[in-house]
Amino acid sequence: MPFSTLLFDLDGTLVDSVADLATGVNLLRQELGLPPLELPAVRGMVGDGATMLVRRSLPEGLFSEERLRRFLALYGEHLLERTTVYPGIREFLEQHRDRKMAVVTNKPLFLTLPLLDGLGLRPFFPVVIGGECCGARKPDPAPVLEALRRLGAEPATAVFIGDHHTDLAAGRAAGVKTCFCAWGIGHDGGQPADYRAATPADLDRLPA
Image (cartoon, rainbow, N blue to C red; front, side):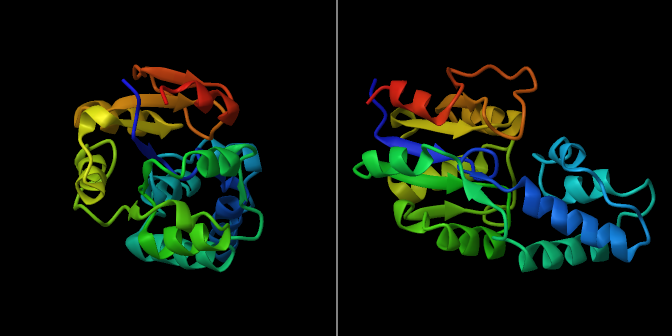
């Protein structure tokens, strides 16, 4: 069945944001008197939301809600310094403007919306679901179902495109098809996917 509805994760799917996330992490570590982490190390910590990123980036016992808030503030100050749209993504979105599209991310809206605006992606997405929108985050299906509700779309018409096992689990539980993006930050964690894309160009193989 052709997909009239395209749902996208954000970090690791539409945009490569690891460098700016690492800046936020390392500024927080600097304030705590800790040495910086290398970019590959931070990359391995990304994918399960800001709370888990901060927990993983600090020594055991140093995480607190106050430090999470401080990280979010620091990251927000450097949100668009080195973050880029993956090659081929903008062209794919332009090609499929006639479809219903939404972003479903665990990133807070106060960071997601400026990021989409700053990179010129916001006009493609009439619906943007952030981490605080549903009272539950991926891998819970609630954000996916809320995106479908706001788009006026049925699960059978939709595919969720993401780079992390949380995306695949959320999409599967919501009754939509899933596409794993191997170019991204995350990993599939053994979760099954209906489609796999090695590069953004492979998204053109999805039923149109």
